Image 1 (cartoon, rainbow, N blue to C red):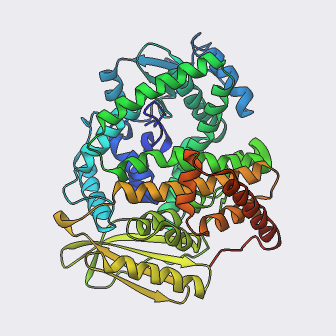
Image 2 (cartoon, rainbow, N blue to C red):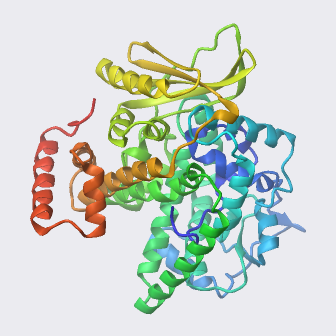
Image 3 (spheres, rainbow, N blue to C red):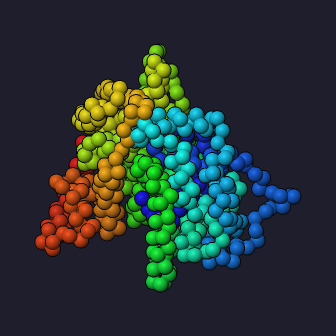
Length: 505
């Protein structure tokens, strides 16, 4: 989980767009929960961009914000078309503006939250007694310092004191303004939501691109500050992190993962794009086809789903529940890693080209079904075996196979559900984050992206990878073993230059 001060802005397109209801399901597993905590923002009507026949854009930036906006233009390689209003509010008014106070949640939204809870219980993500609304509300209220509302075209900031953390957060939010003015966030959202429901592309993956882009600029902004200012930022983040931890002590680890994922796994993909093509490559990704969630597990892999990806078949004695949605590599990885070892789960995730899912009811029981397209018959064998192992520890679940497609169905166990443990999710995050970091390091060193991902993949497949990563992180790896590790990576680089698909099923 990033520090508590890391922005989790409700003003991203997945939270303040008028058509976001269609992405209220799993939706790539990432966007859904963030949507839930910002239902109030979802309800904001599209306001007129004219007041009294005149543009309401301010002539100049707020003097406190102007230097940050100028720096963002330099770092992002885009210019603002005009300033926007920046409002500073006390916490209670901020929560009301963000929609995290829950006051605007209606019957439709509560029904979606109930269905989402059933989905997460069926997939083994949360316990049977988790109140998903309360958990996401707590996380949203504690983890948001500012947001950009693309309907009202304004930035809203929690508090009136502009410390280093707030300045860094504004650097993040101002990137969303640039994205909106140049690429139209509303249109990105509309297209991604439609692709998620109809094609198996992931709205969550697009969210990760949007947030990864903003985080990358925020990090660069921080690097441009003085050493004393960066030290002050670290102290502020530590304090914010403690406050966030106290406020979310009862929040399930899976909910924490969902809130942090776009900010944790989006930046590696953006850095891979920058290494390969600069800001232009990022612009192309933001305006191009909606990718699958594979970009969470294979940094920089901006791949749309295969054409005509099959939807799960619903039999005559079953009733559709909710809208169809994507279920891809990242969702499968987290699902399998909660009950299997992360290396096996990641290998299975790498085999996925895309997938589509649908909630349904069987004999009044809520179930969730996903059909996954794999790379080959061998890949389908591996994924089916991994899912069969998962099914043995699940309630009322089964797996079927049709050529290179694998389908699983999991039903809601209700109050008996046992959610993902903190230890399992931490191991999954460590492996995935480290693998992404290795790929980014190689790409920024001049290695082609596909080769860089291959090197990282082979490293993660090595024996004891997670333990090795923990020892490297703690500084407990002896010099001799560290040298062996360097030599291992060098050999893997040679292997991947010859065959960038090495390690794939």
